[in-house]
Image 1 (cartoon, rainbow, N blue to C red):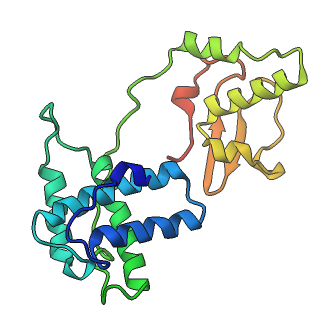
Image 2: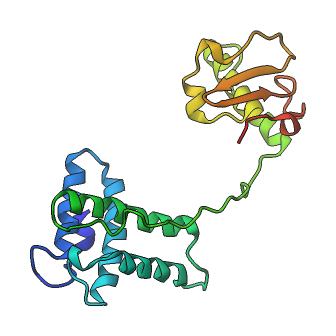
Image 3: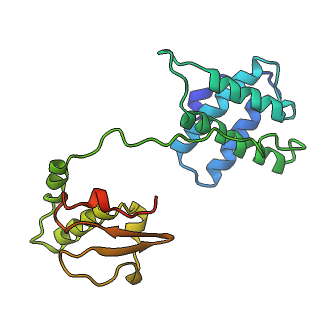
Length: 219
């Protein structure tokens, strides 16, 4: 992580944004955050600190809510080398570490108020998946498990439920006995996961059996 940002930004003083960011990242490392996560956070914090340094802002006490809103506008107006803007997801990804960082700054007594506490992040756009499997591709995947073995039967059942119900992986990984009612082969299976109730539509083993039209996942 530190190898990426050996060059300090701003004045060489213990209360600089750069020094405080290194202290914050070390604090997060001590709490077992992964190196990958910390590297991403270091990148986004360094980007903000560089932006602030260009505007004469060098310590956490220099950062106010209007300053962060200016930075948010900067991200919104920024254009990549191909002329495209940053997606709302990317903008959120760059702003979220600042929220956690300044929360830590205030808790450490390094600033009087958290300028990011009520910062409104960009709304996430809702997009359909770019690539959807065809029926033939789904059949190929469903045919991969060896149903002559116990493990293969298990894997096939998991794939069937995922495809037919639209459950999340986490929901399928921790089912309760009450999550599914009794059914016969060829019947619809009523599934319940958390606040969602769904119907595994279509005949099991038949990807073309109407699952797309009859899915009731409550998303």
